[in-house]
Image (tube, rainbow, N blue to C red; front, top):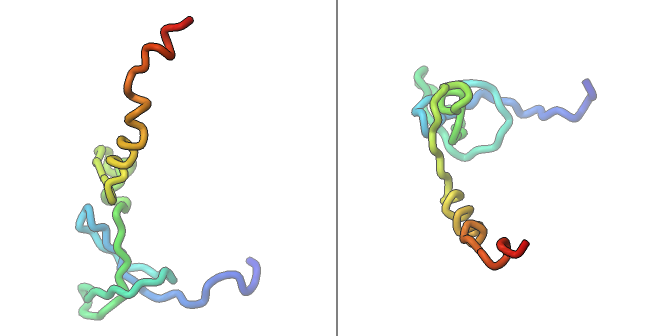
Length: 93
């Protein structure tokens, strides 16, 4: 491995999947200001996730509809004009 390119500030953190109510403890250097008290009574930095292996359809085998921050509504509004049929543009031919 190349020297001096990897972060040095690894620490134990809790990752919490909000959609599946699942948490796990591991090492990371990802920044966060949130903390949580873990099962062992100690306080650790908390990183919140929207999807993990407990909620992702590839691992669960179940489709789950996740709409974060109205992305689907934004998409539908942006491309609504393309779904409307425009007969004058296509019937000439």
